[in-house]
Image (cartoon, rainbow, N blue to C red):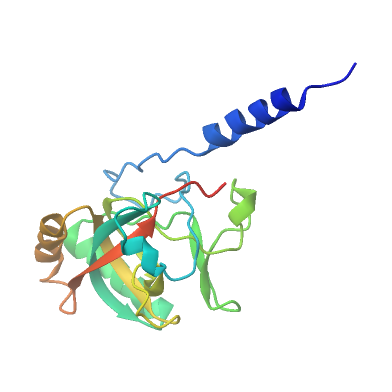
Length: 186
């Protein structure tokens, strides 16, 4: 009894497409929500083609950045302070800072085996605090610069609104236009 290659390919295609979903995380929680389903992306800087509106795998976004720097633990302290002052939720996406790799990585016990011990950034719009590699969103940023992200927004107006909310507690806050990969990563 043989098998038909078209049937095998069809089943594979259906399974692959079913795995490529992009749920938007619920950002209404007031505590650290480390148990989210991950939306993974390449850790390299966004390529120039990301800004090309014809490329549907990338989305232009506006990020409200509370602060930047190369010292993770200083930004982490600032993140918890900003959380207390603004009420914005924290979402680590089940990641932590690995000092050996000098990188933010997914926990080694994460349910997603493909990205354990590797970095993946926030990719979808939401208002919550996290620490990210800045060059993920802005290819002009140096590789070692981290950003305390307060929001990823679809419009500059929305990002400006978050900026206004955090500015009293985050004196270095700013809004930057960026691009994120929103295509399937599995």
